[in-house]
Image 1: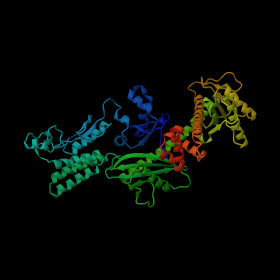
Image 2: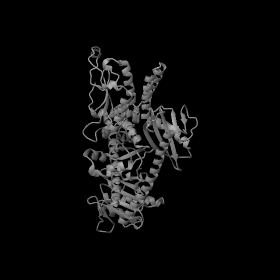
Image 3: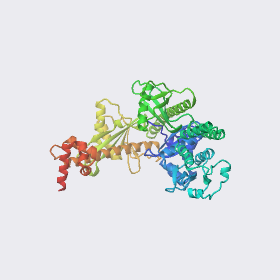
Image 4: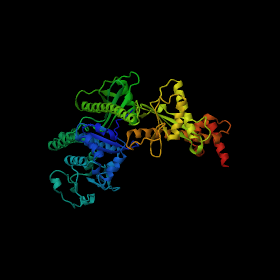
Length: 599
């Protein structure tokens, strides 16, 4: 599976649609969720207008590794979806970003007749807090809804049973204009008042259905008692609630809990969008890419991902909407809606899948163009007659003269081709001799390619200066291919590039894309060699420690190395941990040996 990931270089390809953008750090954690009327312009503002940002915003931008987007139909859709996502993920920069104050909460107090109001101070034991709300406008919209359809007091009176019974209070203007039912003078009891508070809690939790049912039942009950005036009030409250819910596709009036799975495809890939709808509100959306392996149908692909995604999200939802017909599938109810809110949700899902597909194709095309441009620049800078589509880079590693090894990494079209990486144990050189070691590994590498009739690279890079380069050239001359392959060396001190039989190095700008490509090759070869060298030293240490034990052979030592990395960690491991790796009998031999060494 894959996700739409936009790097900083790709923000110009973002759409001009309204929607949500989610910033991720290098650990794949969501650090910020934002809404935008125009996603492209909003995201660009973070990266292009840095002089206008405060320190906290700059710090957030510095942590952004990539971003994901969700396209919606309107700015209001974006506003509501933003709030849903912030509640779900609680990104750290949505809590403290704009200023030093925390974002507000909605508090339902623990009073006998609870109050509902916004606050920035969270005091333990004072009541039930909902939030925080990074978007104050969205929070105020909800509070206005409560004031319109419920009769919740706004006063600060201490409404204990004793105070009410003693008649300490009088009704206020809120009662006379129909905004409060005057619990202060006993015109509504606790039980009736609490029923309205319960509906407030349902709505704040994202469940509008129970509140709608409450007003509908109250309206019908009042009508059955011929209390038509009261029934009309309940009807108006129900209509207000439905109006609030019907403003957006993100929160729909007729839907409860369901999921949307849609698929669009081309010859090689399927693009699947998933949306989760809870009580009519979109809680999250995700688009993935799947590569066709055989001749799977869209139906087969979609069934597979319904199971996989539901497992990932721990979902048990059985009602699913889709854009394609799916045959009987367990106890799932899968439909392709033709009209109404359900069809709008499917269309929104398809819209996200299609945009994902478009962006993936654009990114691939852009990546190929960038690769060609970099390779053309490298060919020009390095005076090559052909594009260096296949580059191989060599490095030695013999820390403190022990366990000499070497590595070769391969880049194709400017990108690492890890399946072509190779490790080398130095066989013919005794002692720490980097020059002779380089001659050996280059000779071994290309004699094998010649023997197996495998194409030679377009460029060879040697990690080192003139000495290392000359050692590699010696091997190429012995193989009679010196004139067939361009070869250069990169020295560490000034990052200068050396050519054979040229005393003067080539100095490229530190900002040069060619130099950055060569440095990437060199660094990757060095990392690969160091890792191999470290593993070899660890294995050697484990062998020295345990190979004298009867019954412990090469395979057991390799398994211990893979699981524990070093002798020290093997000694620190418990019997059960070692047993899981090599079995009970051999674990007993190892632990007995360790105990004997400690005596």
